[in-house]
Structures are given as C-alpha cells and as structure tokens.
Length: 333
Image (cartoon, rainbow, N blue to C red; front, side):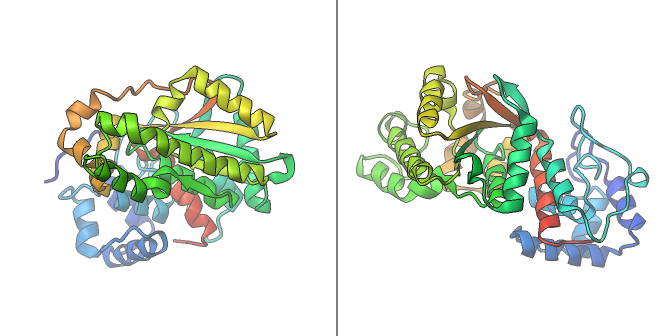
C-alpha cells in the first residue's frame, strides 16, 4: 500500500477506465502513446495501471499528467487529490463523454482559466484574448510586441506554463537556464566555486546579476525587432522590487511594447515533488537541504506591480495546459 495522499481515491481512476470500457492493457498502451507525443518517457503496462487503481503505487507527476490528457479530466476528478477552491471536480458519471473532435479554442480557454488577476490594473480577459488571437494567427504583432515575464519558485511549473504560451503564440521563449547555464557553470568553477551551485553568496553576488543581464539583453533584441517574447526565469529578486518593476515597465513603454508579468503560484509539497522528479544537478542543494531551502521561500510573494497569477497549486494549471496541448496535437481517446 502506497503512502496515503490527501484526497487520493484510486477507485475513481478504475471507475473512469471502466466507464470508457477500456482494459488495463489498453490504458497502458494509450499512456505510452501519450508519453511519446509529450516526451513523458512512460513505460506503462497493465501492471502499472493496476497498481495506480489499487493504491499500491501513487502515480508520479508524468503519469498523472498523462491520465489527465487521456481522460480530459483534472487531477481532482481523477481521484489523485482534493479539489482546489473553485476548481471543477465532477464525478465520472457527471462529466461529458470525451469527444472525438474536441474544440481547440475551447480547450485553450479552459487552460487559460488558471490565469487570474493578481494586482494592479490588469485585464485578464484581454490577456486571454491576446493569447488566443496569437495562436489563431501565429502573429501577435498587430498591437506592437509583447513581453511576458513568467516567474516563480523552482518546481512551481513556470517553465511548463511558459512553453504552453510559446506553443500557442509562436513567440520565442528565452529560458534563463538554457541561455546561460553552460557559461554560468564554467564561470562558477573559474571563480573557485561549484558548477552546480545556485545558493552561495558567490553565485548571488557575482554570477546571478550577469545571468539576468544576458536574459534581458536578449529580450530587448527581440522587442527592438518587433517580436513578442516570453521570458522564463524565477525573477524572485526582480519581482520583489517595486523600483525594478517600474523601470522595466517604463523601458517597455518607451519601446512601445506591452508587458504581462505572470507569477506561477504553487504549494511547497508540489514544488518539492517536481524538483525531486526532474533531478537537475542545480537542484542538488535544495533536495539535500529542503527544509533550509523552504525557509527561504515566501509562498505569499507576488510581483510588486501589475501582474497576473497562475494557480498551479497541486499541478492544476499545468494539467489543464497538458490537455489543451493534446487537443491541439489531435490526440483523442
């Protein structure tokens, strides 16, 4: 028997499978197909599904996401966890049967429902419309370029949400780690530090400022060409400073670019699970000293200026994004 999780009810997963008249073997095959499409690296078979349905194994994050894609249900509806406040959580008999030809725009709108107003004068409906229009036309430059800042703590789901927006809009994604990690690793070593260090004073004082300078310069290059761009980075120090936010907004205004700052909200247990699951070398200190790291995390942190909030507690927003992405790729049950 696996360790019990709040709200976990494996019998629901079995009931959903049986309502679709699928065998354990068929579900395993479909999960493997989803894994290939979305690069989840699943090795699902009938034994895996049986273990998930009989409480001997709690599905890891990629399996939970794959089940969500397969059945077009969120994790609460699948019985993996309790529902978030305001989250749709119907029982299988109350949910409409999965359609052979889902509505792509509707799936995107449902996924973007996880975005809500955070603070300041932000228009969430206008933002959703802009993203959907960009997806439809693959060109969002009619109103000038837009720069999206997607921030959040390690394991919050910010990179997955940034990629989701990138797939919809066709806008380039500038991921801080992808842009700078090879140089950062070598620079830290050259300065006498550890290549995977992301917690020392050496990193914070000597290296981190250069990382963000590279990221922002690459963003300005895109904006100067009239190209909208998505920036994927924690932005913890930057979002915490009202002065930084104001300077950034002023510079964007001068370049006639619109701005959307997005904070990806997540709970500490889910962040730990995803950090452990991805097993990145740069997260080694966090994994070995989780309680010490968690003491530095402020779950109430929000950008000090106009911003949006994506509610990814318990992975809810990313699960919805997965399902929208699968609809766009033509996946059907």
